[in-house]
Image (tube, rainbow over all chains, first blue to last red; front, side, top):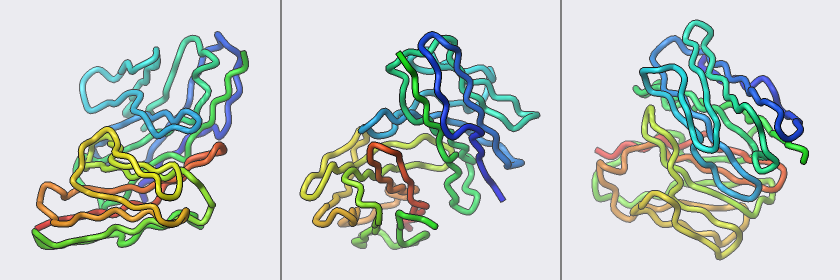
Length: 115
Length: 110
């Protein structure tokens, strides 16, 4: 079965610390990969996406993610977090061609940044 | 066990038909959302609601409409379906503690 696993449910960091949120998926075919952020009280926003090409993708607000095909991973990183990065982060793995219509979302990682 | 329910899971319908996609949640969340997602593409917000009798259009223009008469219910309606409406529709709800997704409705208009 296809699945997405986000390793950390809740991460607590101090400002200026580096961030890495793990995302692993199980699916053997071609995938497109996304990270979304949900700030408290707001809807989801797209942070970055990977379709093809350079496996290191840069997104908004200083976030980046690296696709490692051999490890089925798409980890999100930020060198130095800010208090305003406090939010919930979701990894999404989406097959370009319908795979039974199942939406493959990670369960989310809550990030709390202490000022 | 899911706390947010979407029905139907799959729907194939002819052009011109009126359809309603159902979304209900049992968590008492005030905020609810509808997203559209084509295969392999990112989510796009099409409607949201911050409470009963409150509905707003999202970032992506959509020909659908929504209503929020009860906290737990946030149906999405297409008055006249077209092939361009073929997509996956995802409902979600949230409160200050988290965000919950439904399992999605995959709509095909033929």
